[in-house]
Amino acid sequence: MLDNTSLDDGTFSFLAQKARQRLPRLFSDYLDGGAHGEHTLRRNRAAFTGWSLLPRGLRNVSSIDLTTKCFGQRWNLPFFLAPVGFAGMFHSDGEVGAARSAAQHGIGMGVSTFSIAAMESLPGCGANLMAQIYVLKDRAITRDMLSRARSCGISGIIVTIDTAITPLRERDARNGFRNLSRPTLQQVAGLLTRPAWLCDTLLHGHMTVRNIERYTSARGVMAQARDIASQIDSQLTWEDLKQLRDIWSGTLVLKGIMHPEDALRALKLGVDGLIISNHGGRQLDPSPATLDVLPTIAEALNGRIDIVIDGGLRRGGDVLTALALGATAISFGRPWAWGLAAQGEQGIQTAIDRLAHEVRDVMALAGLNSLTAMRQAGRAALWPPET
Ligand SMILES: Cc1cc2nc3c(=O)[nH]c(=O)nc-3n(C[C@H](O)[C@H](O)[C@H](O)COP(=O)(O)O)c2cc1C
Figure 1 (cartoon, protein in one colour):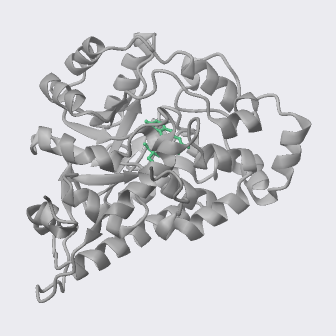
Figure 2 (tube, rainbow, N blue to C red; figure 1 turned 90 degrees about the horizontal axis):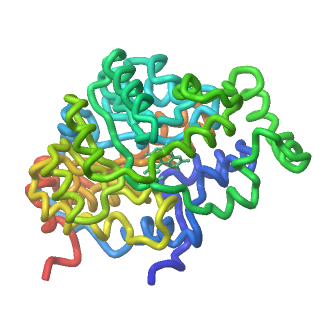
């Protein structure tokens, strides 16, 4: 119903545009694109247009406290950098730059299984990082990932559960993205049109997925990714998750929850938090927007565990809307990757700063001086009112 809304990149438009200019088309399409008809991708964004924040004055908003506790960590802003696979291919600052930006801003970050940088090499490894895990058929690999995370001080893992299979992504199929290990003439010609990216990649980039290279004999980013992706266990069930809960005593967060029944089941199993996510429209298409399912999941959980939401958050108002509807914090994937692709680490900092600035603006004008005040107001901060 909202499918025809054109995508707008909100406060990140400038970075997104720069990223598209600097990246070869097959990488910018990989980053921007979604599954099948990309309905979910558009819906995520469009869902925010149905909500407004109510202006409230005379409430002393001279200072605004954005600190929050989430997933057992204390953050200066209610933001989490979503795990983004192959981010290190967008710019040589890669995941190291992202981890540094997250640490500097005092926010959380998920390190993708498909991180070009090994988790051990990330600065501040531990403090605010969480390792994102795809459970593979060979559980020894999963156990090894957990033990590596533990050894480098990472206290939390994110188990992504919405990737039983990888669906067709038309842009990637058209560009031959998955076959990049043997580039065609057309692909090489495409890379040559982006000299700044090409020089950076040839001089400083890594041609291997360092985080997982030890688990595969394949060589080259795409071949390694293909090999490990083919090992993601599509037979995974709640029983396996229970076993994982038993062997991982740290913070465990499930990513990809979209149904209140699944949220309650996760709670019963002892998980510490959830990320409401449809993988940024890259998996099941069509599926509802994450914002649309947030209220029923928040109601079912009733504050018992933290909820983070991702998918299409591009403005300060989107952040406040999600918090008012029950999220503890928000997460974003493409925006920080656009920042990285456009300007390296500096671009990620800009992305975080811009969103934080907008959040402060909207909170001040909505008469809210802290996230506690925001949560207390809840739905009452929004228009239309609850019926
Ligand atoms: C290029 C790209 C790669 C991604 N790789 C992963 C991944 O390796 N693991 C994962 O759990 N989610 C992955 N995601 C999903 C993000 O973590 C997040 O759910 C999504 O980007 C949120 O939507 P947004 O991009 O609209 O903010 C990826 C998303 C993108 C765009």
